[in-house]
Length: 245
Ligand code: MN
Image (tube, rainbow, N blue to C red; front, side, top):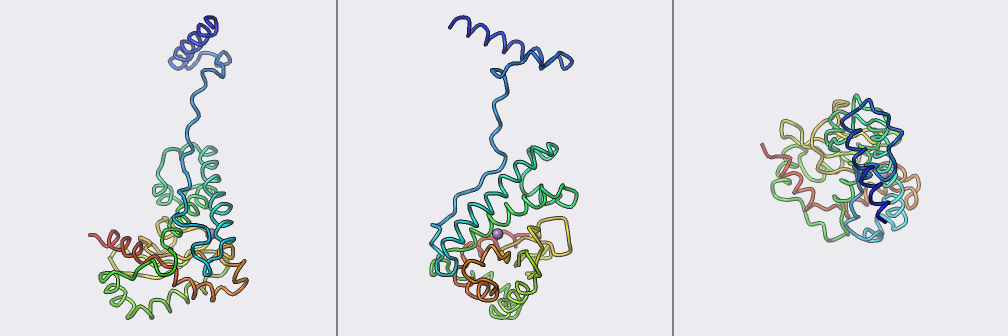
């Protein structure tokens, strides 16, 4: 035991010396003095409800696969992409999005996917529990779209108009007005790409993986049914935060 401790202490001393002498050979370092592995930069928060909680609108199997495999893979992919591109280490998710235009594709796609899905889980809630738009949000919807129904009609058309994979969004623009739009793949309005930019307060995943098991090719049925699982309390909270001067 004494010998082990002594070697360990020597190793630590050696490590300290190496740290201060960059030109020293590193072959002498041992696993015992390897740096403690850093915790993964990004982790997946728990789903705020059970996998089956949004049935029958979002079926349990879709929710499980979507959360564990699709979103889970994006979190793992983002952490791996940062290891492969260490200049991106230590940056917040928001900072990665704000600089997505110059980032490697693996950073852009996985950072977007991680942010988008984390957002999406929270703006949904079991039917009957999500409340209603706040008076302030309702006033803004009426001001910028004419009515809640007119907003939903525009959001539906945008969701249906996204060819291939992507997201549809309700955002607060820099000028404080609401706008509906769509982004391809895992892009989002927080990225420094495209013309549709602002703070998302509602968003729908229109990738086929979000609905195909239950709705097959009928994206419109998913988009229409989805309104009954909106967490308007969360959307209203996001609006209040985004609309602050
Ligand atoms: Mn998805």
